[in-house]
Amino acid sequence: MDNILESLDSPEKLKSLSIKELKTLAAEIREEIKNVVSRNGGHLATNLGIVEITLVLHRLFDFRKDRLVFDVGHQCYTHKIITGRKKVFPSIRTMNGLSGYPSRRESEYDTFNAGHAGTSISAGLGLACGDEIQHTDRRIVALIGDGSIPTGLSFEGLNQLGHLQKNMIIILNDNEMAISRTVGALAHHLTRIRTGAFYNENKKRLHNILRKLPLGKKVNEIADHVSSSLIGGFLPGHFFNELGLRYFGPIDGHSFNELENVISNCTKLGGPIIVHAVTTKGHGYKPAKDDPEYFHGAKPFNINDGSSAKPSDRRSYSSMFADKITSLARENSKIVAITAAMSTGTGLSVFREKFPERFFDVGICEQHAVTFGGGLSEAGLKPVVAIYSSFLQRSYDQLFHDISMQEDMNILFAIDRAGLVGSDGFSHHGLLDISMLRTLPNFALMAPRDGQEFEKMVEFAVTQTGIFALRYPREIVPDVFSGFPCPEITMGTGEIITEGERIVVLGYGATVARAFQAHKSLEQDGVSITVANARFAKPLDISMLRALSDNHDILITVEDHNEAGGFGSGVTETCMRENIAFSNIHIMGVPDSLVDHAPRSEQIRKTGLDEQGIIRTVKKYWEKL
Image (cartoon, rainbow, N blue to C red; front, side, top):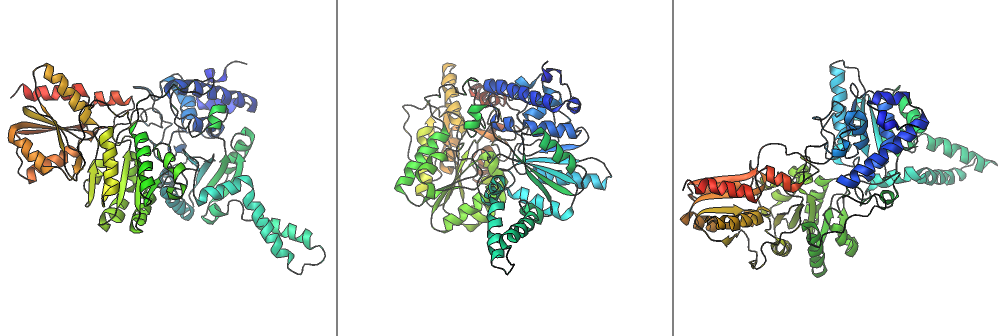
């Protein structure tokens, strides 16, 4: 048989394929995904699990007119392959290549740029209501995973959808996983549906009740019949039915026949519908099926056995955080850890193994994580909330209302993936946390220059009372400061690393190492600058700023964050308020734009935040002095 994928140039051709041909096509797509992700890295396990559902949806709908709304979006690889992007699919997640998420820039088939969870139902309902108002005849399909549906936004969308009764089909892709295994009461509910336990438990309970009633000689037979009839009326989708949705399932998410029969029948019905499809993450590739958490966001690997290249001997900030917080928890029983479905990514899986009773994975519910942490603090504990910078954005109101406004909270926010993050692209960059958090009263903001300072900051935040936010990047810990002792951390104090003339480069966090490297290069050209490490973005070291202004003309701030409202803005505002005078303050940060996916090092170079970018900026001012 000829390669079906090779000749597939549009989703329209799916309609003419037999079920046997669809199975062949699914196998070909899985091979293509495995081959590409083994070279580029990317989201493997979830995409291997969604192939059949994606093909059936494109077979039954025309998504140039109808609308397919992805939740999170990392399960869109099959969708990209069959919507005209097959030839460029090998470029996915590489610089100038395809995005690893739906991208409106790429295709008319991509309805929303989607990199976060819980958005599809609300967005889909908005489309459905808008279409009704404008008399537009098309169908809306939201594709959501069981890890995303427990989010607060999903519940809010379901609540209004059930109330408004708009025409919309929700495909619930249930693979028991977000990145880690799904947690919470709804996840447990879906598991019981999936295994049949919910039905059997309730049937047995009702059967026992009926047996006690005076039903005569055939009591067992009658009890069986009555209990089956009663339970069949509201199980297994009772939860969704009560919200006003028609529930169909669970069905086999890898069976073309079952998927097509159920979903095609649903298209003939009105109102909101949820189709519960059970899939296997990593389906069709044993290494990914055996370890779906590792292969969720895979690094390049050997396709034959799934093995990855030997990890670097140098450590990441995430692994250093995991070891440090676990070590501190041995000494302090009040330390508890919270994550939002990211126990592996944040490193807290290490803490979970050592202290399971003090570890909480709240699922993809960052708002809840923050307020839950506030409650733990009020109960007298020391909560450590580890969340990626990009995802912490969801919880801004909770950070103010339930943490900052309480005034005397005792909590540490460990903000992983701060700054530019690389191939995940603009939905995952952590470029807003400084501007977001420095506006909140009672928060202290810190960022380390290197590993030894990072460990001291973690210990400082855990042993002090207050609200601390510690940001750190997705990168290997730099080793450029070997031989430079790290002073102890005291609140709101910075550090002078090298002393030069007239120009000072004030770095924050990950940028300090690059400023130091720039200083060494500039020295060879006869340019001597001062390099300072802010350590704190709030409170700023006013004494250090005032001392620097006494013998420097130019202040250059550098941050791995948006220029607008960030660290440099805070320094400028402070200098104005405190009458600290420099002839010029130059803010170096990420411009006000969406930075495309590329290696983190390339993103840093393109935004001018690398060593050479700092050198160019210094020389521009040096030549004018």
